[in-house]
Length: 555
Image (spheres, rainbow, N blue to C red):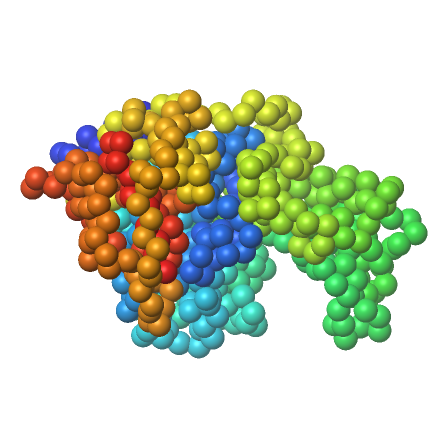
């Protein structure tokens, strides 16, 4: 089914207020292929670009699809964008814009509550805390309501890595199940497509062994066949994530491991994946596909065979350009390629969906785990596949052949009907801004497409600085980053009018941030199009109605 049919179908269903049951979790998973995480972005507390990555664009999302991925996971923060458990409308708009980019690219999309400052993940799970239950209830009610009309291509995951730093036992499971039950019940209560949307529950720590040993009581659902289980895979840790020498109580230090599979070192045994500092030997299973096969077999037995599909919400391994060079680096890279291929192969063999973790860091220092470029320092080439060998290894597992860079793959067919309106005055059917539709405030150039599809370089309209109203006197505020502080003076540009934190126009208008991301599309109602600017994130914004433009800053 093509994209247009998805969106139009959802719109027709929404219009009739009759929601047929969505495909089951198993039916959805059968089409999810391999997946990719937009890491260190939307889950950054308070600011999606705060950890050095770009705000996602349509072109970036299209590049993910073109690389061979059928699924994208969007780790997301919510608590840092909320007050008294009420999520800022502008943040919901921003998240929906990114989800729409994924929908437009034809990607199954997993949206979660990630670390988010640790309000849930860092709980001790000795009992279910009332404040955590309240947040789960409130946040998932709001998130689910916003996306109620989206079809089965959108999945919700209730949390990330619960109790990541705990030593788990069966006594902690009831609190985990309570938090998950709250998530499920909140989503289901919103009705519509959420009544049968696939929901994902995370095992404790998302650790396979802990999940297999202790997570024997699943939360309940009022419909059968619509739950998935999520675990993560970073085994062995010393190979995938360790970046510096550590002391674990053995007679020798624990070292980061660089070599795997058919590319083990004969001279640096302690640097081989699976080296055991206590036994002073290499565990062959950890240095081969055997370990992944064994771990994923556990998940098949515990969940898949019982009707709960399993996703590997994260997997990946650091590239150690910080420590290696020459032939040693080549040997490391070859083993790393094999590790990724082994994980994907084992996942496919046992029926799990692997979702690659990408944190965006391409530096030659620590924590280099980037496959598709999305760092702010390389924003002009965001979407470029920078680890072609690993991508090709993954593609090979799914019979896709080698990756060929053909540019943006799918930015043309966007239906005029939306799968879910943002609010009474806003719809994702208006303008989708991609990386080719950047608003450059320094030169007062706005890239905008009047066809309400995708802005492109051919649709750039230049405006002189005299046609842009810049509000330069800012009100001060000490109540937080999300407090609106806009010039109290009246700013007028033909039909556009900005006064007292309200933007109004005689005709429909659109609001962008300076990165070209669509924030709102507002339509005329009752003779005027109006938008309250309360709770906008700090930054520069540009509103456009026809040929009229106002630029203002929120501090």
